[in-house]
Length: 172
Image 1: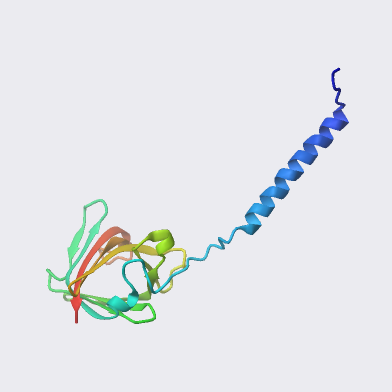
Image 2: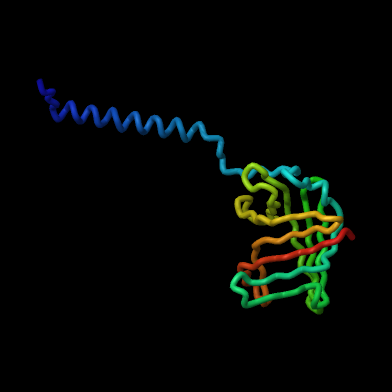
C-alpha cells in the first residue's frame, strides 16, 4: 500500500524540518563560548613574561618589506632600539633613527598557548584588540630574539607597508 501525501502535509513536514534545523543552529551557536575576545596570559607554554621583564637594548634591529624592496638596519646605520617590558605585560619600544629622532610604540603583550603556542601576541595601543600581531620569541643565555610580520613606514610619509622585523636584544 502506497502512502499518499497531500501538499498541505508535505508543507507541514518541510516547515517542521526547517524549524528543527533553525532551532538546532540557534542552540549550537548560543552554546559557543567564542565571544571574539582574545585571551592573553602572562604565561606561555615555554616562556612567561616574567622571564623577559626588564630593559633590553637591540644589537640587531632589521625591518624589511615583505616584497624585499626596502630594508632598514637600524643599529647598523647608527640608530638604536630599546624594549622595556613590565611584569604586567605592558611594553614600550623606542626606535631611534640617526638624525631623525625617535618613534615610541607601546602596548600589551602576552601569550595564548591554546591558540598560538609559544608565539608572543602583541597589541599596540590604539589598535583594535583583534588587530594583534604575532611574534616568534626565544630567550637564550640572556639574549632575546623576536621576529615576525608587522607594518613599517620606510619612507617616513605616513604610509606603512607589510614588513618583517628581526630583533636581537640584550638586557640593558
